[in-house]
Image (tube, rainbow, N blue to C red; front, side, top):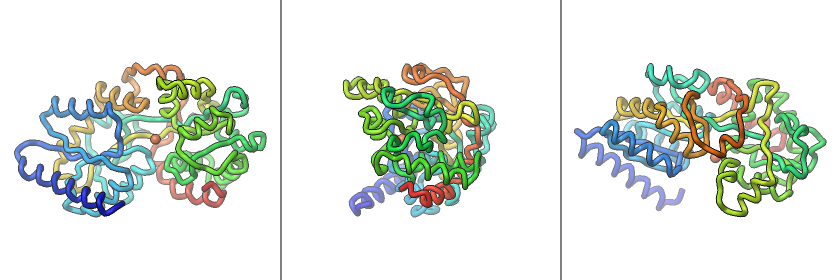
Length: 341
Ligand code: FE
């Protein structure tokens, strides 16, 4: 972080703290968020309208926000941390940032496997296999394991093995199949790489669409974005691609989450619980998920999203988020040994 950013950060903390002090009588909630989607704005204003609780939001990158809460210590104005990826949420929890969430509403609304004692998932995304229709046959890429088959030599594009999305995938694989099998898979995958890992999931999708590689693994919402895009180049890319929901004959497609926890030192704990409960309401769930083309954690919630419809229904892995997230460090080590940089 540059010193200017640091200074800006310190000022915002001060501003947040002052607001809390000056308007002590007016209920507020301080949210640190690593989710930045325009539709989320509607969520926040709707909550304020419903409850009269004013939201002060600090947006930042996950790692910066985590560091910041740690550095602010007991004086942190943060009530809630919202971020994506189970491994990151677990990391925050391991660092002792969260407190237990006691809420009957959340217990009844959010399925067991999407809840841990100290953090809760509000929407899900799947790690899907996406291939080039012209270059690869669907039957070659039905499982994550298939991508390590030597038949796909020189055909696989992936983002870095250190990225949390891949670490969470590796962590779930370790939970299902063990460390040795996961390392062997990563080795096979690396052998099949068309190029050194670079860029994000969207870059892999575009490379697959362009025929630079035949197949990749991408979070579902990146494909949904291409499907919903009005840019001709994106439309063309989407047309070249097909999606496969992996592992449908076994434990289902790996899913990851957007989630939140209440900070241990939260000055406005009651408001924080209210906000998390609000996020589990039908209306908020639809907004929250649709804002990033995700699926609501509350499965009964109706969504109206053409891209999600187009991608179709699938069997999702129901491995508890906690069991998965605790393997993230092992996954990183297995990927390192396999040479997946
Ligand atoms: Fe993402």
